[in-house]
Structure formats: structure tokens, C-alpha cells
Length: 343
Ligand code: AMP
Ligand code: TRP
Image 1 (cartoon, rainbow, N blue to C red):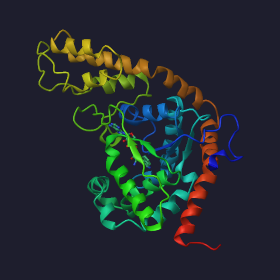
Image 2: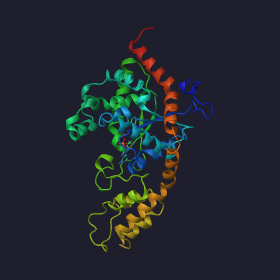
Image 3: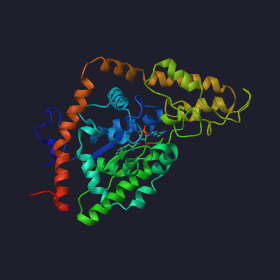
Image 4: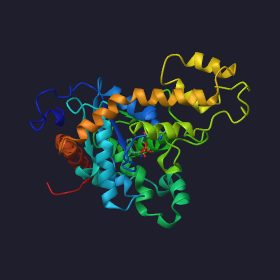
């Protein structure tokens, strides 16, 4: 029987035991999610809570690899949880928790690390990027980052992992790690699968690179409307369209691409661009209006929830408590197979 059915769980709507489990993590590196997070991962994660036993995690241990201010980590974690709740995460059906409230993840990461050759983690693209981006701070946890990520998923034996395309290498490594552990200690862990949306890499407002907080090219979907408008209006469009009368190329214009996800009339918007009936500024204004309208309800809900003292912390605490039996059970079984601890 799944540990999730234990008495610690509110009896109102226990997750069904027959459903596959889905897990994902998001770093509290920013308080507000951006459009890339939403289109690449969040909307999928929210949709999956209907059909799967969903476990979603604010990965604050991971964030420590780049952020060393405890106040920032705590505040961003709270803000990110608030955003998930506003965007449709339902704590009666799914579990949202803070990684550091389930420290079993760290012990499992250590156990898994014993089957991981150093070369596997050294060649991880994200490690190479971080070594380049923060040369003053190439800390050891950056190297073991993907092992902790594998442990996050494996500790709940989750099968599906909604993520953006930038997480492909991490997911592949997670699969290799559990495969190596299973080969040494006997089949136990499910090999997790990445689940992508139809927008697995959303470009930023520069029109070039992946939308990312650290690059400052984001559209913060739950920000105030005037912030969203500013972020959208500075978007780079088709760089070959110089004059207002030049025909636009929606295939290469990021503003046109984003319209595909924010209305079912994008083809007529694209036609307007191609025939130069509309200019880039018009198309951007429309995009800003649509983003603001699309997330209006979530923005309002976020404010309502923020006004309820202690609510977010309660949700996170309850989530971590519900997971305790499952995390402990996985760890106990691994320790047993690996010959650790007294009997
Ligand atoms: P991060 O904000 O980097 O912690 O990412 C949280 C989740 O959003 C991960 O699943 C990422 O893969 C996904 N994600 C982040 N940026 C993008 C993007 N520009 N396009 C698509 N998915 C993204
Ligand atoms: N590395 C992921 C990111 O940067 C966050 C993460 C940590 C994660 N643990 C995870 C994602 C487990 C999926 C599953 O976005």
C-alpha cells in the first residue's frame, strides 16, 4: 500500500493509489514565474494533477548552489509557492512542498552518488554553464546538483517529470543514475521520463536566448499590468523588418510565436504581419493585452491568497508531512539493500 494513504493524509480526497506519479521541481531563484516557466512547464504540471498523483517541490537546496542569502531563498520560495497556488495548483488533489522540509532527499542523493562516475557529472551542460557564469563560486554542490535532482524524483518513484527542454540532460542523467543503482542493488527505482509541452523552449524578450530570469529577458506573468506591458513592448521582433511597410515573417518573430499560445486567431495575426497590414508595435500591444487578460484571474487570486496569513506555509507544511512516510520508506529500503544501519 502506498505510504500516501497513511493516516497523516487528510481524508477528504486521498490521491488514488493506482495512478502514476508525477514530480517536478522549481527553484526559488525568482519569486515570480515567467512566461517560459508557464508555457514550458507550469501549465503542464497543473493539468497533470487531474490524472496523476502529483508532487511538486520548491527546490531550495538546489537554489543554494547560486544564492547565498537565506532571506532571499525563503522569500522567493514563499512567493513561488504562492504563484503555483494562484495558477491552479490544488492542494486538495496534489502535493506542494519545500525540498528542505524533506531532508531525506539529501541522504538519498548521497546514496545514489556512490554509483555515479565523476565524469558523468563533470560533463553535465548545466555544470559547464555555471562554471562559466559564476567562476568565483564553483562550489561542490554545483557538481552534484543533478544527483540531488535524481534523488528528488526517485525518492517518490515518480514516473513522469514535466520540465522544459533545458532539463533534458538532467533527466537523462536521472535515468542513468537510477539504472546504475538498480543494476548494482536490484530493480527498485522507476526510470523517470521527461514530459514536454508544445512550447518546450520559450525565447526571451531578446528574441534570441531562452527566456530566463538570469538573462533579464523575461515576461513575468503575474506582475502588475504596467510591468508586463513594458516587458512585452521591449521585445525584439523580426530584425529584418525595418520599415512599417516591410512584410513581417511570423515564423521568425518571437511576438508572433507567442501569439500561438494566447488565442486561437493567431493565423489572422500572422496574416496581418505578412501583408504589413499591422506593424510590430500593434502586434506587441495585442500580445501584452492578452497576457494581462489571460493571467488576470491568477493575479487576483495571488493577492487574495497573500492576504491569508500563514496559508502558504500551511500548504507547504502539510505537503511535506504527507510525504514523510513515503520518503522514509524509500530511504529505509535503499539503506537495507546497501547494508546500512542496524537491524
Ligand atoms: P527554472 O526557472 O529555471 O527553475 O525552471 C523551472 C521550469 O521551467 C523548468 O522545468 C524549466 O525547464 C522550465 N523553463 C524555464 N525556462 C524556460 C523556457 N524559457 N522555456 C521553456 N521552459 C522553461
Ligand atoms: N533543475 C531543475 C531546474 O532548474 C529543478 C529541479 C530540481 C527539478 N529537482 C527537480 C526538476 C526534479 C524536475 C525534477 O529547473
